[in-house]
Length: 247
View (cartoon, rainbow, N blue to C red):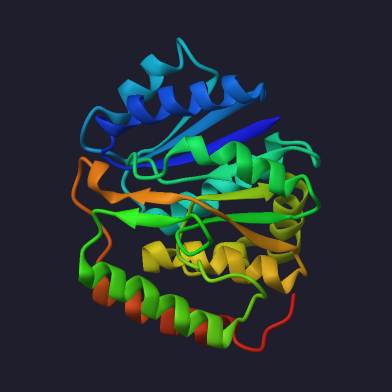
């Protein structure tokens, strides 16, 4: 079983497009699936749209009463998934803004089944790339990747900040059990939760690799909520929290 987790904030436009493409990709690959949408206190119709989609697709809808940010949303989502999935299942995380195309997922799942615990969908893997991302955002993303790779090297991995990943459910369960609330501790730093999860998996000895995808940032229908200065400071907080630490 493949369970996809979609953290959603004001994605009423993108959500139906993404769900449709994901369902087509999974049906085409013969993969049984379900979708978990966690609406993070959206001010638009995201929650209502998710409930309407749940009438046609296997979707669980969870809602925060108020906006808590991506970090807390990822923690709540991962803890929920650890409870409802089996050890042999696969958990997929991806952004809900239609920038992560599901067509790349079957290849990543096939790679995971070769014995990997985490497969990162990577712009930097051979065959990957990006479209529509500004030079400034590209610079920040690459700089963050270099910074994190120096401090927390993972063989064969260059993509640290992308949330498009496949996780072995048993590994997520283990991480939640071992780290508890500290699995995603830096919740108030928002997007820093994404590399924090990867670093915690590294601490547990997870087998991690990459699979190519093309980021379609030009398909994003809503403005980014990622604040550059906050994220940069968050990476330093992450380094302080995780450097030299063992599970």
